[in-house]
Image (cartoon, rainbow over all chains, first blue to last red; front, side, top):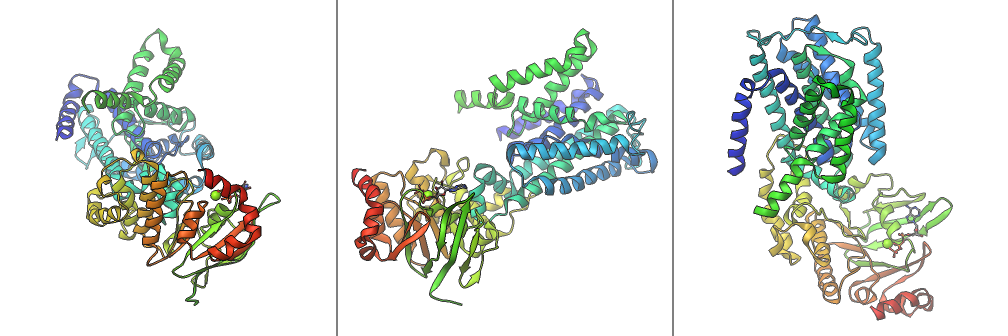
Length: 308
Length: 255
Ligand SMILES: Nc1ncnc2c1ncn2[C@@H]1O[C@H](COP(=O)(O)OP(=O)(O)OP(=O)(O)O)[C@@H](O)[C@H]1O
Ligand SMILES: [Mg+2]
């Protein structure tokens, strides 16, 4: 009951937020929060560190962007197509990677992601270094004009809530129960008759599809699909967001995404703009050394210690 | 189909980079027996378990389960056939509750293990059966405890309850009493005796007292090869076994 009251307050805040903050910034936070939550499904609940997750963000973005520019697709269908494309790519990449363990898994996902980076760099329909620019946001269901930022914001919020709900449901589902068992003791799960690689693969596909959903949505918000979203920097950034917020927690990635986007936004305007990467790196080091369970993880510990 | 032997191995060999850990082992495990696999440290007992459950691939040899060749099957598939193993180091899911540990095993036959869109509340219908299993190993009061917090002996008991949930035809137990105090050893030994009623058990065990109490048949391994086989009287009277076991037996007395 307490939890749901908390959630209602959060939802209320999210609904009024665009009247206090710049909607595009809020939408950016929501897209990255969804991306980080999708990534956390793998890292926090299966124990798989993907180091190429940007490829699913970017693929969703490019597919949605291309379709919005070149066909008369409505935005919800454009986003659906981008999500499916990332899910399919995830199905292939997952097959190739989930058998690997630990650092090898990270390396294979990175290598596969780099492969797609060069495809997007060279392919004739992605605009090369410039990316796809001026992507129309279109009319939701054919009649809600998304070029209005407030409309767009509520659409993005709905998408985020759907993705967030689905990840939560996955974690607290019969499937999620097996994922947790695998994370806890993989050989034991095998000895109980579970083909652990099939479960990891399914989680990989769900994570990839939701990362694609985040990327497709982000493309509509910024009306841009570019190489930044498939670059390995982006893969690193989502690791940072998740660890900073608290991996394996439900709200951690959301908080992590908000903090990272907030800092980047704050720095990019001022004189410190050139030092963004160094500052993010320092934050990363401090967070790994001092708050091992991330912001939300540490708060949970304090709450447990004092009220539990 | 042989009704007598649940499991047979024929000339099982496992080599690690020129070192033969399992050397031409042919086992016959009779249905309904408690069969003990004993031998000094490094004799290859755990390796045999790993081969039987395909956690390792044999270099050569054949494994028959109920007369069917399972040598090329995958670990999880072998488990689904009814050969379920435990591990030398206790095999539990530490961050799940005690109840959830057993439920993970019960869940397999429900056919919902890929249903990510359903609430895990539907698993609650397995709770009664899970509690029953926990009670059968004396863990009825611990259903809601976190598994990490259990004592070592109770973790082993939980492991047995989880294995029993699958109703395996053949249970492989790797040193179920290792590292336990006397009381826990007796509890677990009695438990094994009790659960052996409707099934066959192959167990690795260092504690010769437990072996003498439980085992119908004993196979002694030494340096990967079968040294001798038979019941406790035959095996313990064999001078080669006494020699191979002298060190271990002395340790046991001290312990
Ligand atoms: N994966 C492996 N790679 C290389 N050598 C191995 C491997 N697994 C086991 N061995 C070696 O094979 C031999 C047999 O090991 P095993 O673990 O089967 O012995 P054990 O009889 O179970 O001993 P213990 O009583 O100590 O548990 C040992 O010398 C061990 O070092
Ligand atoms: Mg061993």
